[in-house]
Image 1 (cartoon, helix red, strand yellow):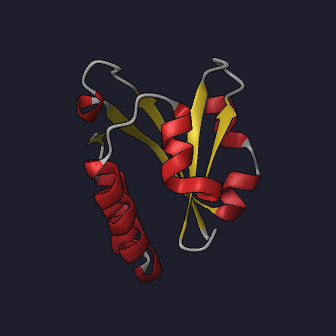
Image 2 (cartoon, one colour):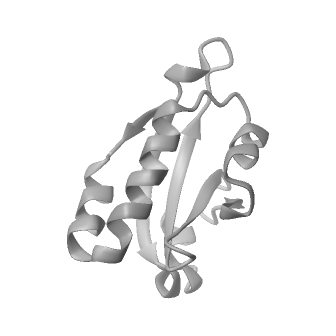
Length: 109
C-alpha cells in the first residue's frame, strides 16, 4: 500500500517522542500490506483498528490506535482488488485520544 500525506505522521513524531516508534511500526506494516477489503485490515491490526462513519459525508474511515491508545490515526483506504499492493492509505488526521473523543473531526470529514 502507498501512504499519502506522510507529513502528518512526521509532524506528530517530531512533536511527541512517544509517537515516533509506534507510527514508524504502523508505517512499515502498511507499506508491506496488500489489502483488498476492510476485513484484511482488521486481520492485520485486530483491535487496534476500527471503521467509523463520518457525519458530513457518511463515508467510512479506518481509525488506528497508536502508542497504546494514546493517539488516533484517521485514514481513508482506497482498495484495489486487482493490484492490492498499489492501494492507497490517505492520512486524514493524527490526534490525541482526547481530541478524538470530542468527535469534532467527524463533522469535518
